[in-house]
Length: 133
Image (cartoon, rainbow, N blue to C red; front, side, top):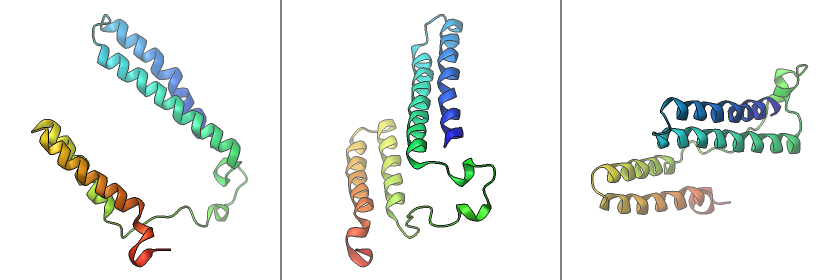
Protein backbone atom coordinates (compact mmCIF):
# COMPACT_ATOMS: atom_id res chain seq x y z
CA UNK A 1 0.00 0.00 0.00
CA UNK A 2 3.03 2.21 -0.20
CA UNK A 3 2.22 3.51 -3.68
CA UNK A 4 -1.40 4.24 -2.74
CA UNK A 5 -0.37 6.15 0.38
CA UNK A 6 2.14 8.22 -1.58
CA UNK A 7 -0.43 8.89 -4.29
CA UNK A 8 -3.05 10.20 -1.87
CA UNK A 9 -0.46 11.94 0.27
CA UNK A 10 0.75 13.86 -2.78
CA UNK A 11 -2.81 15.12 -3.18
CA UNK A 12 -2.26 17.36 -0.17
CA UNK A 13 0.73 19.01 -1.83
CA UNK A 14 -1.33 19.48 -4.99
CA UNK A 15 -4.70 20.64 -3.71
CA UNK A 16 -3.52 23.14 -1.08
CA UNK A 17 -1.51 25.26 -3.56
CA UNK A 18 -4.34 24.92 -6.10
CA UNK A 19 -6.79 26.30 -3.54
CA UNK A 20 -4.45 29.25 -2.88
CA UNK A 21 -4.11 29.90 -6.61
CA UNK A 22 -7.90 29.64 -6.99
CA UNK A 23 -8.37 32.14 -4.20
CA UNK A 24 -5.88 34.51 -5.78
CA UNK A 25 -7.51 34.25 -9.22
CA UNK A 26 -10.99 34.90 -7.80
CA UNK A 27 -9.70 37.78 -5.63
CA UNK A 28 -10.72 35.82 -2.51
CA UNK A 29 -14.41 36.47 -3.22
CA UNK A 30 -15.53 32.87 -3.92
CA UNK A 31 -15.09 31.06 -0.60
CA UNK A 32 -17.01 27.90 -1.45
CA UNK A 33 -14.50 26.84 -4.09
CA UNK A 34 -11.51 27.67 -1.90
CA UNK A 35 -12.89 25.75 1.04
CA UNK A 36 -13.98 22.84 -1.16
CA UNK A 37 -10.52 22.42 -2.67
CA UNK A 38 -8.91 22.69 0.77
CA UNK A 39 -11.27 19.99 2.07
CA UNK A 40 -10.37 17.74 -0.87
CA UNK A 41 -6.71 18.17 0.10
CA UNK A 42 -7.52 17.29 3.70
CA UNK A 43 -9.47 14.22 2.60
CA UNK A 44 -6.58 13.10 0.41
CA UNK A 45 -4.25 13.50 3.39
CA UNK A 46 -6.50 11.45 5.66
CA UNK A 47 -6.80 8.65 3.09
CA UNK A 48 -3.02 8.69 2.52
CA UNK A 49 -2.34 8.52 6.27
CA UNK A 50 -4.81 5.64 6.71
CA UNK A 51 -3.26 3.69 3.84
CA UNK A 52 0.23 4.37 5.20
CA UNK A 53 -0.66 3.10 8.69
CA UNK A 54 -2.49 0.10 7.26
CA UNK A 55 0.41 -0.71 4.96
CA UNK A 56 2.82 -0.75 7.90
CA UNK A 57 0.49 -3.00 9.88
CA UNK A 58 -0.33 -5.45 7.07
CA UNK A 59 3.06 -5.63 5.42
CA UNK A 60 3.89 -6.07 1.75
CA UNK A 61 1.20 -7.37 -0.55
CA UNK A 62 1.96 -9.23 -3.77
CA UNK A 63 1.09 -6.05 -5.68
CA UNK A 64 3.86 -4.19 -3.86
CA UNK A 65 6.63 -6.63 -4.77
CA UNK A 66 8.19 -6.65 -8.26
CA UNK A 67 9.09 -10.36 -8.01
CA UNK A 68 5.56 -11.53 -7.05
CA UNK A 69 3.64 -14.11 -9.03
CA UNK A 70 0.01 -13.80 -10.06
CA UNK A 71 -1.09 -16.80 -8.00
CA UNK A 72 0.10 -15.13 -4.78
CA UNK A 73 -2.83 -12.72 -4.95
CA UNK A 74 -5.39 -15.53 -5.25
CA UNK A 75 -7.74 -16.42 -2.45
CA UNK A 76 -10.49 -14.75 -0.53
CA UNK A 77 -10.56 -10.97 -1.02
CA UNK A 78 -13.42 -10.19 1.31
CA UNK A 79 -17.02 -11.03 2.10
CA UNK A 80 -19.65 -9.77 -0.30
CA UNK A 81 -23.41 -10.29 -0.50
CA UNK A 82 -24.39 -10.54 -4.15
CA UNK A 83 -28.04 -11.31 -3.33
CA UNK A 84 -28.56 -8.43 -0.92
CA UNK A 85 -31.28 -5.89 -1.74
CA UNK A 86 -30.37 -3.52 1.11
CA UNK A 87 -27.83 -1.42 -0.85
CA UNK A 88 -30.53 -0.69 -3.42
CA UNK A 89 -32.98 0.37 -0.71
CA UNK A 90 -30.31 2.55 0.90
CA UNK A 91 -29.50 4.16 -2.45
CA UNK A 92 -33.19 4.88 -3.05
CA UNK A 93 -33.43 6.42 0.41
CA UNK A 94 -30.46 8.69 -0.36
CA UNK A 95 -32.04 9.66 -3.67
CA UNK A 96 -35.25 10.44 -1.80
CA UNK A 97 -33.28 12.60 0.62
CA UNK A 98 -31.82 14.66 -2.21
CA UNK A 99 -35.26 14.88 -3.80
CA UNK A 100 -36.56 16.21 -0.50
CA UNK A 101 -33.89 18.91 -0.45
CA UNK A 102 -34.99 20.02 -3.92
CA UNK A 103 -38.78 19.62 -3.73
CA UNK A 104 -40.09 19.59 -0.19
CA UNK A 105 -38.24 19.22 3.07
CA UNK A 106 -40.83 16.82 4.53
CA UNK A 107 -39.60 14.14 2.08
CA UNK A 108 -36.20 14.23 3.83
CA UNK A 109 -37.80 12.87 7.01
CA UNK A 110 -39.42 9.97 5.15
CA UNK A 111 -36.16 9.23 3.34
CA UNK A 112 -34.20 9.36 6.62
CA UNK A 113 -36.55 6.79 8.14
CA UNK A 114 -36.18 4.54 5.11
CA UNK A 115 -32.38 4.99 5.22
CA UNK A 116 -32.32 3.98 8.88
CA UNK A 117 -34.36 0.83 8.16
CA UNK A 118 -32.14 -0.03 5.17
CA UNK A 119 -28.93 0.51 7.11
CA UNK A 120 -30.07 -1.63 10.03
CA UNK A 121 -31.28 -4.30 7.59
CA UNK A 122 -27.95 -4.33 5.78
CA UNK A 123 -25.88 -4.46 8.97
CA UNK A 124 -27.91 -7.26 10.54
CA UNK A 125 -28.49 -9.20 7.32
CA UNK A 126 -26.49 -12.19 8.53
CA UNK A 127 -27.89 -12.13 12.06
CA UNK A 128 -31.35 -13.38 11.14
CA UNK A 129 -33.19 -15.50 8.62
CA UNK A 130 -31.67 -18.04 6.24
CA UNK A 131 -28.14 -16.66 6.47
CA UNK A 132 -27.83 -16.35 10.28
CA UNK A 133 -24.57 -17.68 11.69
